[in-house]
Length: 152
Image (cartoon, rainbow, N blue to C red; front, side):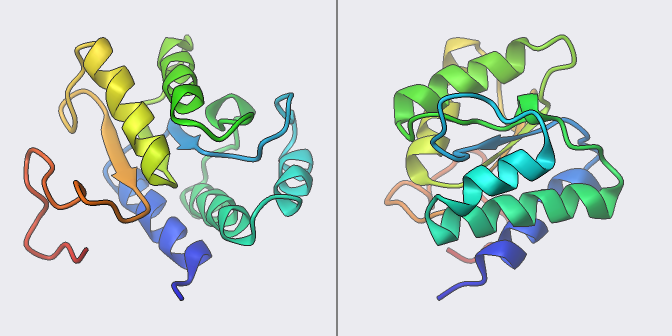
């Protein structure tokens, strides 16, 4: 079993090291309304799958490590579906201070994010940076290819 919290922290830390300060978290707790505080978000997450909760904690840890203030508008909540991820990534890209990177914690979240980027004719990593956490059949075939140090 992987250390979901630490792996998520390292993934988001890679985005902050690349200069990103507006990082969307795609696949948050399945609650009907957006929690407005970090405490409320963590409470909602505690009722979710353990692995999902740990990935959210890792995201928040990395923001803290980089001195980035938590913005609830950059966390997807609601049904965990590819369509919801598509909608939420579009919403985060439409904010006045839009997301410049996304941490997608499941394959369907990544697929939804990629669908949104394609619809908006945005490239990655050119226009937006993406990191996906999960394994899928297509994960080893991104364009451009992953660096040689990448381990599936």
